[in-house]
Length: 174
Image (cartoon, rainbow, N blue to C red):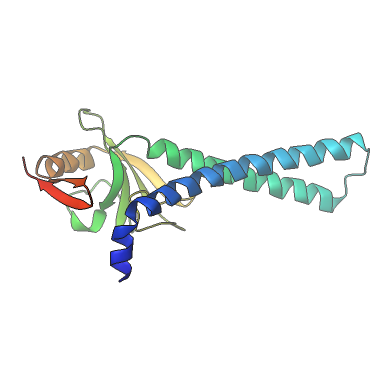
């Protein structure tokens, strides 16, 4: 039943997941703005900078910067159609990546000879079953791999394309 609901509402779920990242970025900007506004108001009123006031400002600035940076890096990584989730444990041929997680986030450029960018979750991961899992800034390792590029090229050459047409999944082999 859960799987049927997920399939039926797949587009809505994707829409909400993408918007949650945008809201995290906007919330970060609001936190930065409110912290800066609080600092300016305290200075204008010449209120002594008590520790509690400064702590509130510092925590707000830190939370805002982390939230905004996480959202920005996520949206930049998943811009375009060639980024997604790769089941890292399934392919033992990639030996130039040290990742203990079962998945890798991959940004592959099909016509490029440069190494493929990857991210390995090391901490918290949100929406892990979605096509674009959200890894907050600082909870992943990242790098580039030429072996991953070779494996992705081979996999994509042999992949089957699935198109959605009027609530039907159509498999197109080439």
